[in-house]
Length: 97
Image 1: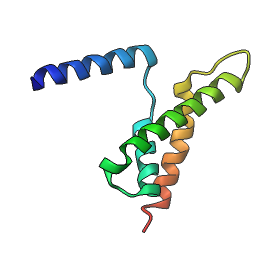
Image 2: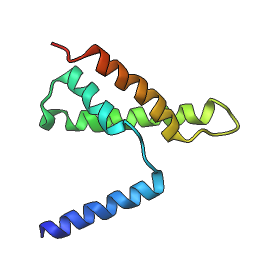
Image 3: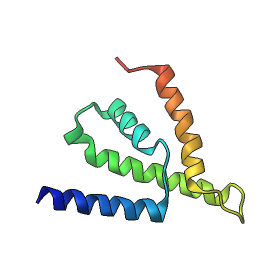
């Protein structure tokens, strides 16, 4: 049963990766920002993390579409640029105590 579950999750992840592409830093930045704001209780912040990840990706998609209108920048480029800046900020700033 576990093997079937792992297989289905792997298949779903592969389909999403093929359709959307990679989003650099998305899985690193959003959980760390949510943990800074709401604490590090994963079971309590899982929904908020998913919501913030969706909002972050939506904002990056809108920016990718309007920055050099009528052309589009790949959304992964915008996520990588903004994500890299936020990631460097998190590294330099350190953990909030």
